[in-house]
Image 1 (cartoon, helix red, strand yellow):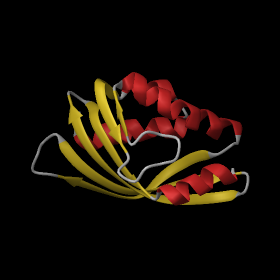
Image 2 (cartoon, rainbow, N blue to C red):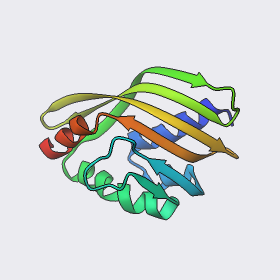
Image 3 (cartoon, helix red, strand yellow):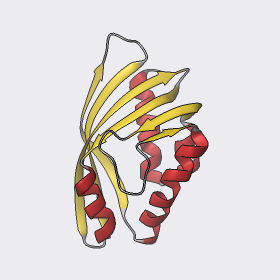
Length: 135
């Protein structure tokens, strides 16, 4: 599977709200990082179980508040000289009961054997926290 296909598969589960399938996109020893910390979530998570434990409440709150991701727009996929690493710039878009939202995101991905071994997510955490608290 090409790196872009791995990213597309990963984010497709955000649209369907299938956290089990999303988690399965990661290697067992995957690392997920937020260089710009989000309140209530550690800056670094190691392993699928830790990733699930941290993000499952966020996904559950999104379901309960009817906040959903509806797409990924303005995607710029950058392959690096390392065949396992890519950078992806995109806008995550969605809906809440208060109206639509848009969030610019950058993913640094390291892919191993068709799965995400590292996801470093660069996002405006203040804006995201505001969105989470408003919905």
